[in-house]
Length: 148
Image 1 (cartoon, rainbow, N blue to C red):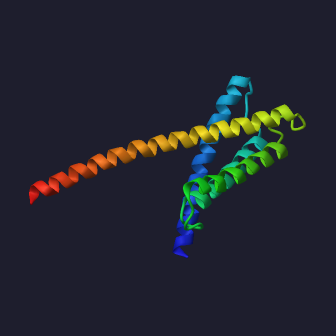
Image 2 (cartoon, rainbow, N blue to C red):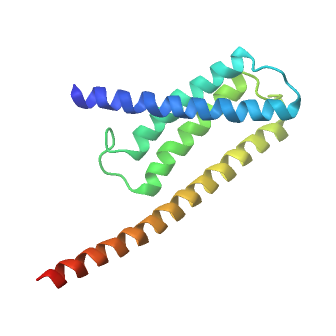
Image 3 (cartoon, rainbow, N blue to C red):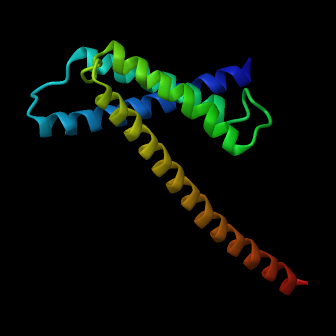
């Protein structure tokens, strides 16, 4: 039960951060488009995407539910359902003219470019941090050897 409650707390925290960030991006976009307010349905769709998206992140990228899975498979477990969640919200909340194929192709293209860019950024971050920790570990080992 404790593990479940910890998971719920982690999910709620991540959802709150994602929702807050989404609202900030939405407000910036709306300022550039000349809007003077954010409609409630837009906020509702951002809340649905935030709660669903962070649940998918916890599902795919932690060991809470899926114990052993390669990282590439975890990315697929996240990306496909998240794209479906976004597409359902785009359709239900009319993010753009839904009967135009070009808009859907643009939507999916933006998703994949953003997803690949985010993935590349995380890979670069993990690579840099790995080198940093390797260097710190090397310093620690040298210090321990010199103490002997």
